[in-house]
Amino acid sequence: MDCDERAGGRAVGRGVVVTGAGRGIGAAMARAFAAEGARLVLADVDGAAVTSVARELGAVAVPGDAASEDGVRTLVSRAREELGEVDVYCANAGVAEHGGPEAPEDAWTRSWEVNVMAHVRAARELLPGWLERGRGHLLVTASAAGLLTNLGSAPYSVTKHGAVAFAEWVRATYRHRGVSAQALCPQGVRTALLDDAGPAGQALLGAGAIEPEDVAATVLEALTDGRFLILPHPEVAEYYRRRATETDRWLGGMNKLQRGLEEAVGATGGSLGP
Image (cartoon, rainbow, N blue to C red; front, side, top):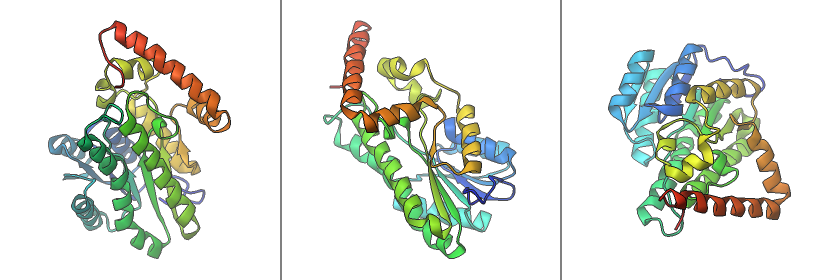
């Protein structure tokens, strides 16, 4: 599946890797790919969860860390053993750490490793083979926070911006050689990440949250037409436009939202930001 205009988006027989596939968006994408006839290798740090999903789908589970150098190298090597070659690599695993500059150093490091370097390391392993074959596809699960921001979570916002930037770089650099990339940027999705977001996260994203299966359906549509930004929440496109063209006004609106959240969350005894 080249996943550009020539590919047609068909997954039959294609070799697909999905990280963070034990639950949430990753598991939903795995099920959607399986329904389309893909051959799957699934990874997650939660070995029991990913093994259960793999058993359900007749896929191969590779429990472990899909962010570290050794973990990514092991995953790609195992995927090649099982699939012959990786046609689509869905770098879906992510972490959401709360706070601002005062967030612990390890929270910033973990965010950088999982939300950015996991994608870089996957590309490092995959690109030589993809360029030789003249086809390959990297799907990066970023977030609307990577196009906008996520109030209350600087590590998440900063690293998701990095994830989008890396996917852009891959697409701009290699597309003429048959290698493409897309960035998946949802807002609220009913997953464990949203459950862990606390009162602020629920206030920001809860009302418009969608199901992981809705995200997976949008992914399959986007793989067919090749669009770079995959936006399960269509309104994000307009927010992104305003951020780019009316930056000061947009930032003023975000600060107003921040102040409203501080009042609302404070009234419930919660906390938002430092």
